[in-house]
Length: 385
Image (cartoon, rainbow, N blue to C red):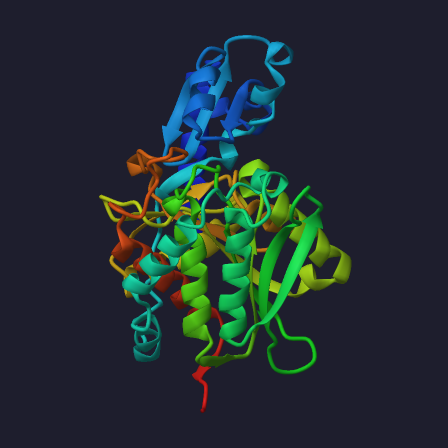
């Protein structure tokens, strides 16, 4: 029943967009006749959007999902504009409140798990990360001990202190320090257990002592999840990956996905979770972004949000612009948990993105959501001393 509902909603949206953008009948709308001219915007950077406005008209804008129609030939666009546009069919596009399952109910053991999350601790971790200096990956070319390097060290030390096996997955040589992802791993039982991956990017656009929401908040959320789950045994392996270079084209996540593909580890991923910008909120909405084939999974995630948090879950498709994308492209059920973009942080990609004024209780609720998802899909037991 839930799949049928999504089908009807998606067809209605496709018909609406086709009629609006291409002046065709809703009865004849199809991916084939709707494919010429509709582009997903893969950036919300204010400067980029201002430039793009000179070449396009906005046809759909909800949450993070913005579709445009070009007003000039595609080939005449500057390279930097073309790089952030992806042609899409209306049938890929979905953005609506989650369709909740009636089969799930609140479990006391999951309530106990999520009660261990601390908003104060998330704020303290995010503040420590934000105050490391300039965290852009480019700073690794500029100075030894940059904010990016200091954040890599902070994450590695924290995960190691929690008992995880830490790997510095270095994928690019820089002039002063290597550019690396930081991974913390705890094996599951048996010889070949399935793995749950949790990702969040540790870099920022590079303003000094800033980037608190984008994305010190998500990295702090990752560390809080690792801390809580360190006190539990699981029938799945746990893999926490603080990625680098997200702001430069998701390069760290793509490099890590390539590593997993080469080692065979990608096939062991049961699913993956990404946290990016989780601390700005005034309306309680969390966006759960995935691709069309995983919307039913995202709806179930939304059910966990309603059961165990105060969040209002919305499901969005298609995915773009953050570390969930490489894993979705590999066929792994993956979602991004992110603050509602229609109420997004006015300091996004600005020097004023500081810890003050952010909503750390909201961030804690997103962490609780993602822990509830893990509890709902794995078997967790409190670890014995």
